[in-house]
Image 1 (cartoon, rainbow, N blue to C red):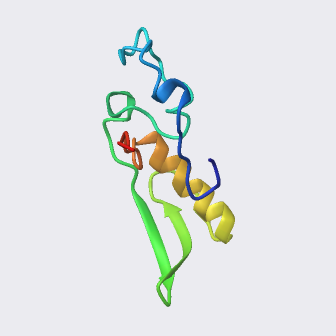
Image 2: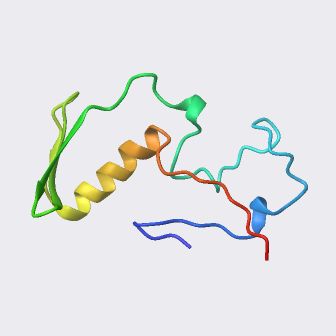
Image 3: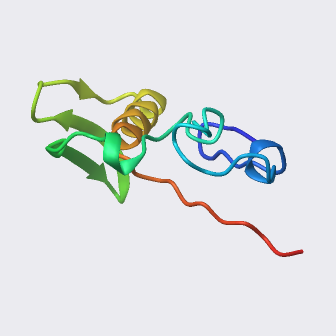
Length: 97
């Protein structure tokens, strides 16, 4: 299931025992489409300033390159892109049903 808020996977390559989990034999292209592996992320942080109004984010400024975004959807998409570049937001779990 994929939306702009969330992505989850069931079955497929996640539950296929033919994939051993190593990066060479199992690149995990589907599972890793929104975030990078921590070893592939930048060694320097993204310096962002997020402005809020009544608890709601209304603007983000990238202090490194000067990018400023205030449209709510664009702000959300941008933060997801920056977070994904830095390995934020990934959790791997397997449910026991």
